[in-house]
Amino acid sequence: MHVDLLVPVKPLTWAKTRLRGAADGGTGAQEAHARLVLALARDTLTAAAGVAAVRQVIVICSDEVACAALAGDGVQAIPDEPAAGLNPALRYGEAVLRVADPTTTVGVLQADLPALRPEELDRAIRAALVTGGRAFCTDRTGTGTTLLVAPPGQPLGPCFGPASAAAHRATGARELTGCWPGLRCDVDTTADLAIARGLGLGRFTSAALGST
Image: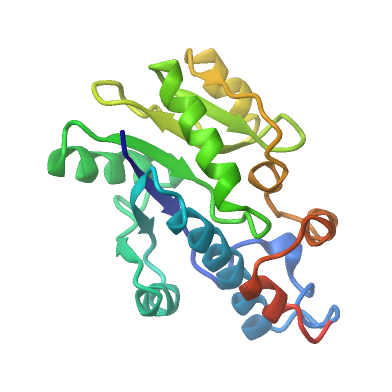
């Protein structure tokens, strides 16, 4: 079975506000911050592209700079519709994928996983496929969600936001268990970034932090 992954990427200038300054020694310049946010996404997408079970990765994004950079990496993007927040955008992306192929399994992968390894994501996706239903992977704190997967015939039912793990669990999605430190290490703060650095950052994030 194959999986089509949706990866939402927010506008670079206002995404990851708690990381502002991490890429330039605390200065917080907009250009340096945007470069870091984009680097997080590019490392996540690079890892996802290396998974055999992933047929395609589609970015949901309306940021022109991000879309242009990702297009240069060969990544397809669809607009953030209906511009009403993350979960509506994911439902729109799911509809696009299921119209194209009703038999596909649809997944959502967060775009801030710079220590993600393809083999981790591969194992997690295979574990999700075995469940035969909706499944999700929590972040390292156990409160957020880094991966959500829904098989053909079942709605994705995204509930991203505060306490998303509990929200997904409440909708009947099965929680995946496994030793996937890179998949669980989403980066929202400088403390998260330090943990990801300990796991081993991807080349884009490493380059964005090269001067710090």
